Image (cartoon, rainbow, N blue to C red; front, side, top):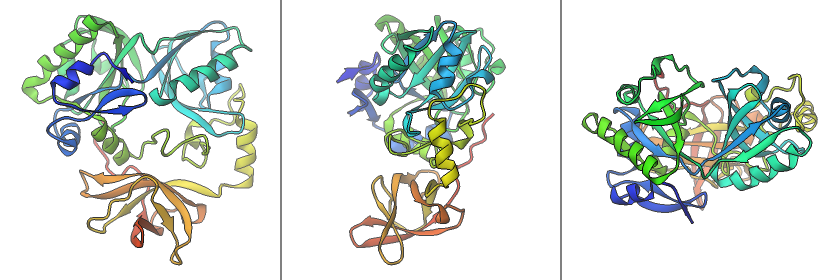
Length: 371
């Protein structure tokens, strides 16, 4: 397994290390997942090591055309300093990954992909790039990446940089110096809370310095390290998709609720659009929905069957857990289109012979005050 530049920091803090996306990553620290979750939702915030993510540099005269062809969102809407959530489909319209495109300057982009799919994505990018005047570079090992999320993190980060963080709009970024280090400072995130993602050199002395300065600045205010467990419960409360669970190569963006990033009328056609138009014309047989249950002690989990009153399987839970903020189980899952409306009732088989009543609920399950 690989290790991020912060591996020893996690171990020193008592992080429980597990395998994730081919890396040894902390699933939680001694205070536990619920405490970490609430530090982000209710406290000053937390720091997530997401250095397992992949970063691809895309540059050249055909950079825009190339990205328009392989991603579903409209890259032409970006300006330098802008970021865009998008997806990476194959010719059949199913999903290889979801990703974020950052426009560094005209004809020059950075694309951030999931760590678990980075090798597969790189092979796809490389294959498709052969048709375009574009240069690709895989910078995944060159970058360390920390997500700093929570209502109080802007004030902490502002003490470490002369860059005016108030001027960075949501889904925008700038290049500046923070913690005496050159980096990309992006206002994106996976928690629903205000926050930033910091891209900088993975060199050990640099990454260690940034980590230490962050926690020195935030220690008195209660800034916490956050593991994978709370990262998952935070994103689930917002209804954000996790690749490998809610979206896979067996799902398409239309049924996954990602039609809003699938711009079928953009000027340069994505290679998946003929297949996706056909899917749309035929009509969707299923949709990804949010689900909640009030039944005490019942926790919906990935892989649990969604059944009808006769016990026939009609869908499946793709992500599920206990919401620390609601103190009840929440989930995402695929159900027949006829049952996808808010308030529709379904049954979830939480263990053999045990079915609980659940209700379709349009995410987010929790609505933070993002500023």
